[in-house]
Length: 359
Image (cartoon, rainbow, N blue to C red; front, side):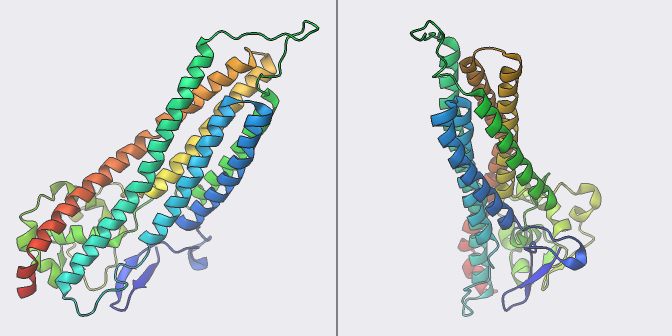
């Protein structure tokens, strides 16, 4: 993984190269690039599909899928913005007149800000999707429970004017599935199909300072402060960071530290912004398959009335949306726990600032 120098002080910041390196193999898209592709493709397709769903297909399942895609696209936009902010240097705009301890306190505040950026966009998208999904489920259940009143024309034939257009549903679901496969392929090309490591050296750096395996002027002065703060859970979370951050200039990691043993290493920390984006892409793929199957079965085998099939498809879409939110919610709660512990430490560090300045 490439190392970029961060600011004039030469601190090494481990971050992803935007397009990879020809020397290391095929170019790898950056997180921001992936999110931008997902945003534009989903937004344009959702706008077209929701128009067709309302005026041509008359399909509740397509309306549900289009609405979810609109929320997905907005989520990608906010995720992209959050990723850009997270990749900004923590040492930018630092006042050189500040002491080492004061600069570290400021950097700790920015690290907490990055955690907020890990939490807020996914949380907003989760809450919006839950509200939207509940409304869709209520409407679908009403459609299934209420008797369907047949409308006959003057010549005695059954009217199908208000029935969902199964052919249009099938066509757009197939297009949507192709779009999903394109986005999943982009994520897989970036080797992110099964997770996104957090590229945040400073969270790792603070954890090393807490457990005593990092040695510099600031870390050594933390000994009296960290003993007053319960960081056990935070230390456990950060054990896995060591493998991802091998090069930290001006800081010496003790290789013999017990927490650095390979047997105790945990899976890499998850980047919630990218996890959120991939969750939405994967869920949309499942939604497209659900609508495609419902439309295909109804069109091929004439299974059930179109209105009934559409209601069942919209229920399936809604349940898939809710099930896909589980891992993301778990990650949000995990990041929230980290944020609380860092906030606790920031408070204690502020109280101890006079002592650190004297040292």
